[in-house]
Amino acid sequence: MAEIEDATIKFEAKKIALKQSKEGTVVTLVVHPSDTANIAPLWETWTGQRYMVVMVGMDDAEQPVSTNTATAAKRTIQQAGILCRDPAFQNWLTGEAGTYIADNEMCVKALCEILGISSRTEMKENHEARDAFLDIRDRFNRSIDHEA
Image (cartoon, rainbow, N blue to C red; front, side, top):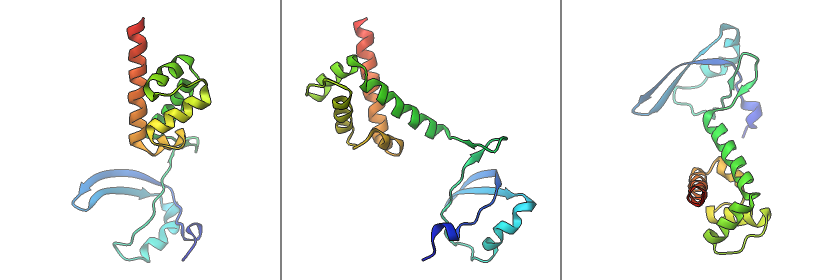
C-alpha cells in the first residue's frame, strides 16, 4: 500500500459550486492553469475512483482560515477550561455530579465523566459531548442568574 504522502495530489483550487445529487453532495472546484500539471494524475484514474480529500481555506496572506465549526469547538473547549477553574462552577457541579469537587483537576475529571469523554479536547470531534457541555454551561449560568 502506498504511503499517503507519496500518493497525495496537491493543488490550489477555488470552490465555484456546491449542490446535492442522489449520490451525495457535489463540490465543483476550478483549478488555476498553472496548477493543471499537478492534477494530471486525476486524468489517469477512472470515474468513480475514491479519494481522501483534505481542504484548508486560505486567506489573501496565504494563511489557513479556520471554519466556524472548528472555531466554535475550540471556544467550547476553552470555556470548559475556564469553568473548571471557577470555584462557583466547582460547587455547582458538586451537586450535579453527586461527588465533592475541591479543585480544577477534580472538576475536569467529573465533567469528563459526566460527558462520557476522557479529555475535554474530545469535544472537538464529539458533537454529543460538546452539546451536553453547552447544556451544562447554560444550566450553570441560569442557576447564577436565579441567585442574583
